[in-house]
Length: 222
Image 1 (cartoon, rainbow, N blue to C red):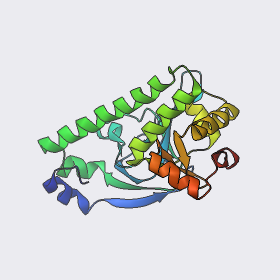
Image 2: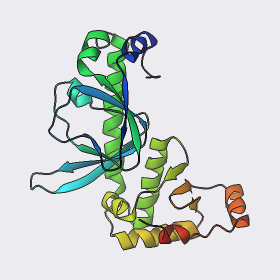
Image 3: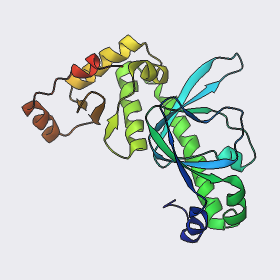
Image 4: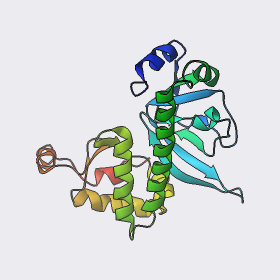
């Protein structure tokens, strides 16, 4: 709500409901319209699309601050299913309230158009990474996009199977190339799930003093 014009944010705040989403829970389902607009407050969601032959494929990830459900706002059906990869929280605002209290405001409409454009850019960025020449480059591109969604170089690493679906690689290949990135100092493990993307020399030295082992990440998968 911080990016919404103040007078509109005040009008919507009383109607905003925050709810938790468990891992595996969906906030949007392809083809099923909803009556709310959502803002991701905490967490990460995997976006998947079922094609004409009935196959489901991973498309991109969306995280904190993303507005989702704007297809509903324009009376269209969602084009992807969004499933929580982490324990998450979202804010929900009824579409009817937005039409009544916000959509008449020009600045709010411009904000929504920017959200649509940023969503398209995100899909395009994820689509382009599969053109990278090797798996390590694809993983680096994926991790960079994840840190952008998190708003921090510290991020939670998905399971190798989920990563493989996003970067078009087998689970075993993902594990092997993550190990390579760790040994090359392009990724630093903090604990079982979290890592620092592109750690600084100071961060690598500090990790060495506490005996962080690069291969821990490969061993800690799922």
